[in-house]
Amino acid sequence: MDKKTVRSHELGNRLLVTTGILTVYLLGRALPLYGVVTNWSSQASQDASALFRTMLSADRHQQTWMALGITPYINASMIMMFLSVFRRAESRAKTSQLKMTRRVERMAFFIAVLMSFTISQSLTFQSDVLEVKHLRYLAMVEMVFGSMLITKLALWNKKHGIGDMTPIILVNLIVGNSQMIRSYDWGKYKPILLLCAVVLVWTLIAETHTLKIPVLRVSINNIHGDKSYIPIKWNPIGTMPVMFASALFLLPQLILKGLAYLFPENPAFLEICKSLVLTDPIGIGVYLFFVILIDVGFSFIMLMPKEQAKNLQKNGDCIADVYAGPATQRYLCGRVFLLSLLSGIFQAGVLCISLLMAYFGILPSGLALVPSNVMLLVGFICPLVREFRAYYLFDHYHFFM
Image 1 (cartoon, helix red, strand yellow):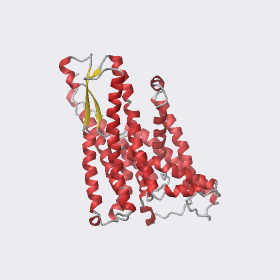
Image 2 (cartoon, one colour):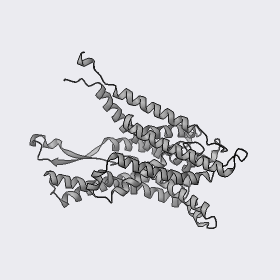
Image 3 (cartoon, helix red, strand yellow):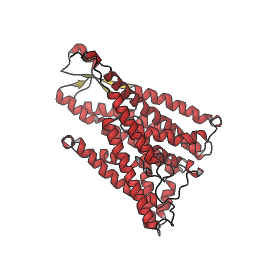
């Protein structure tokens, strides 16, 4: 057989897997919880807090099997990454990816149970079907099952599909916001359109530009030394802080609602919960703090500048014009901190402007998170396009041997 006719179909196979996964997800998202009185035409769900649920589950009413969305999986991933900071590098190296995945799944299951319990308290059930107590338990089981199914789908897509969990989030953003987009006359809200344009341009630039730190490597011939560098994106971890902060922001709300249900004689839980919304200055401040904290903190967790400095010194390499050892650590940590802080300030600043515009009545509350949705769309599409192109080039590569 002519070697030139031999061509892989990696891209097509992965797209087929991702399409099947999204089909299963959409079918589950259309399944209402048994015995729950559905009210999908309510306009009360157009506020900014409900758009968080749209982003993470596309079910702002929280009345389907997929009501929890990917929130348990995201929160579990954040917790495990945070805990990894307190472990030594040798210990992290000995932990297999399979073991880490199982830990994330167990943590996601625990969070899903907690969330399903809290959400079930706010649902209205048809008492003529079964006892309300039994229907509430059944709804919890359905929501937890849906959450575990989404986790499995995301992990399966990460291994065999394309885009990790990006396709599920993109579906949530597109489907969940389609009704909102059609319900407003955008000609009346030109400031938010201008803000979205700024976000679009900045996110594209930040996603496609990197800071190149030149490295002198002893294993590379000097004539190629100028091509060796440590790349750090202008926004080191992309738009993940906006999504992670959204998931993290919902968690204390659910915990406080659960405590209010368990201790109804203590009104403090509900009072605090009422302040943790995006229509209250306290809630806005907490959310923006989460965005900056996650941007800076997870940049250090994922890029590990201290570990990079130790590896450079161990291999005999060094950064140009910087001494090895502590000086290199300070240099890399400084660059990561500066880029992540600027990225976090910009993301939080844009969201602060839109949320305050909604708070003072300049914008409807339902439009407050449109800039963040634009940021997420661009931030997810850019790496998705790069991955798509990589598989496309792989399929069209002609092997010489």
